[in-house]
Amino acid sequence: MLSEYTYVLSHIQNYYLVCNQMYLGLQLPWTWKCSKLLMKFIHAGLNTIAMILAIVSMVAVFEYHNARNIPNMYSLHSWIGLTAVIFYSLQLFLGFAVFLLPFAPVPLRAALLPIHVYSGLTIFATVIATALMGITEKLIFSFPVYSASPPEATFVNCLGLLLVIFGALILWMASRTHWKRPPEENLLKSMGFEVIQQFAELHHKNA
Image (cartoon, rainbow, N blue to C red; front, side, top):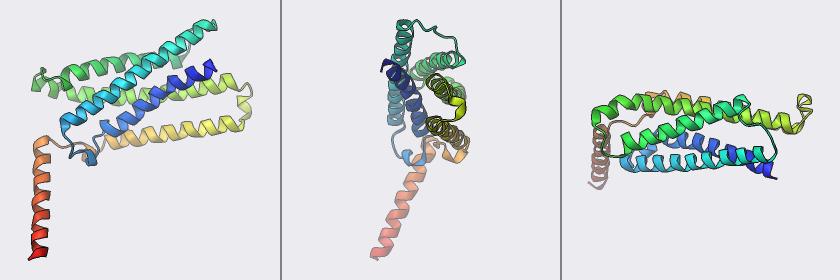
């Protein structure tokens, strides 16, 4: 039971981070009418929750390994997973310090924004890779006849393929310029034009 708990908990934060990057990292058009500061707070809050889940899951895995005398940090899955958590914590800290708090100068924010975006997408891809390796390890340890392709293994393999497709789709969307949030002044101008256009149409109908 503890084994299943540590496995599930260690991957909940992976999928949580994936969903967070999909929803807020891309700044989808239907979020443009929301305040940019509000979106920053939501983005930071969700990332903080994901960071807490990552720390709790890592503690649970280490405690389980130590209780069962299982070596720690011996697989590529654990190496890349720990690397992702470390860089994710740095990303979160720098994001708070530079982009959320009002102390950083605008030129510094402008210079670090491309690095922040690139590192976020890199961590996103690393988390997917970590989840895939964790799924494979779990299957190999749970099914000695994994090579015989039992139904459970086939089902989980299909889920892994869907995760790869999902990640590729998100990275493709992130590379599209028309998905990115426009500058605040351009956004206000476009929203103001829409309001004027709607008012004109309403006035024309009532005339």
